[in-house]
Image 1 (cartoon, helix red, strand yellow):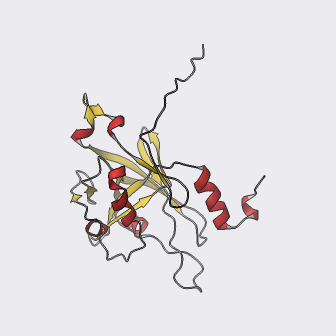
Image 2: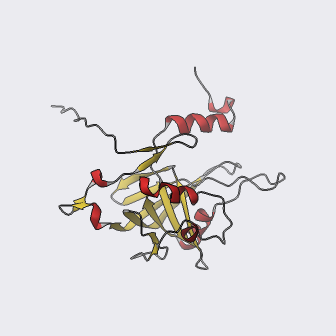
Image 3: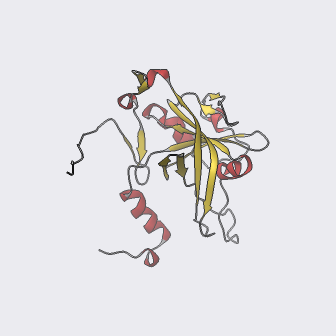
Length: 210
């Protein structure tokens, strides 16, 4: 079977991508509007893209238009807040936090504070204004580096690239002064409503080329 993206529907292409490009890490992004309203939402089109400078990138899609006559989607609160303030925090999601993360994924009105909705603790950041999720074991404070906007179709998205300016690691996940990856029970996004845990692992040593 060979598929050309231009020959299938958006939903079919979306299904292929989400079911094959997986598992995907989850960026639980906390932002603050210019007026001070808090927002928290998860995004699974997310990864680290550079170490020097330290950059994280995630891609928030557009909300479907509420009215049929509108030809383009609506900007999500997260992206709008980042455009306004140029700051945000990426919080890492563990299995223990799965239900709270999922609760914050709803398409709520901008007036809704997802921290309060999910009974999460907004803890002050060191450098940026948006708070971090206190319950998350690792938080990355970010300053906006660049936004790449793709075609203005109703289902398009933007790529938000942020430079890490401060990292918070819970002391309980430190071993000999370093982050203990084995202590993090992280989750990843699969296709549809499926997720996976990262506790099951195996090791492989890269070949040495003389």
